[in-house]
Image 1 (tube, rainbow, N blue to C red):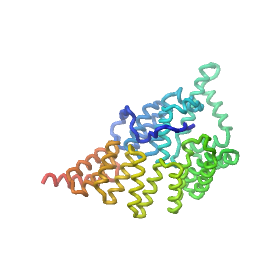
Image 2: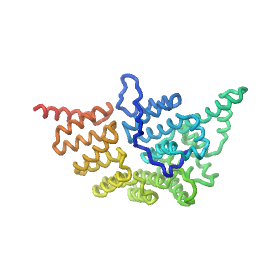
Image 3: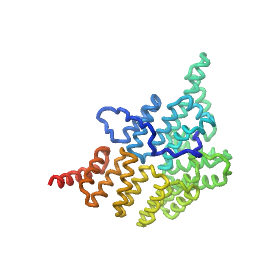
Length: 395
């Protein structure tokens, strides 16, 4: 169950008012590695969802391009309040429409704007937590039956649920071949097929079956267009998001013209859908059309001015186009928005280097090295440049 986001502010890369403290990690681990925080969060998710949410938060700060981190934080935040979570899963309208839930679910939507084909593997864990909570509550009321017995009964019933429900469960548990078959059965039975087609299309893409993915996603968006405007459409079924998905499939198939058309249709559906501008910018940059590329990146930043990733991408695009002063503005803004994000420091160092500002460049390279993971491939180049610039300063 995903709440509607009508009127909600997209959280995504925005900092909360009270930034969580970094979780204390085991001695010796790379605390600049987003994956370390992500793995720590997964380990804590069931036992301590609040600490897991903090870990996922820092994974997203260190690497704001990680769709998994935003999605996982949304799951952890849902689990952090058992009573609210039960009402959420049971579809309580007041809960679903609350500002708090809209902010939490906007993390999921933001993750899909980063990667529409995100593997939503934690959904099944959420469902099992929901069942476990029901079982515990039932056992408290009836002491003649244990929580484990109640949970067994519920899970047995779920195994005989609708094809759509079983497809979703098979997908979450990694039984992809079975999930594809069950989604096909669900599509045959369902009156409203778009959601199942979208899920099946995304799974085909994950399995590198792009032609099948394109077929399902195209049918899904056609069906969404037939949906009455007054009908409730969940965020992960938005036409803009499905068109974004189609554009990425077309890119994998090598049809750049069709990809551009899909991203253009995404913007026709939703003028505020910034990922389409980013993708159109990438296509233009690859075609060496820097004017269009910069225009698209600028439009994306205008829509989401507080997104450090967009500022970084725009700054990088300006830098490779030789517009160093403009690039510097965007990269400094990216750093201001997310000081833990290492990549902008590196590009800013190169930009300042290119302008002959050695001392300032040295400072940015050092900032990059202080924040970059030990596994970052750019470390060697930055370390060499730090040595060279430091030697010049000593002369």
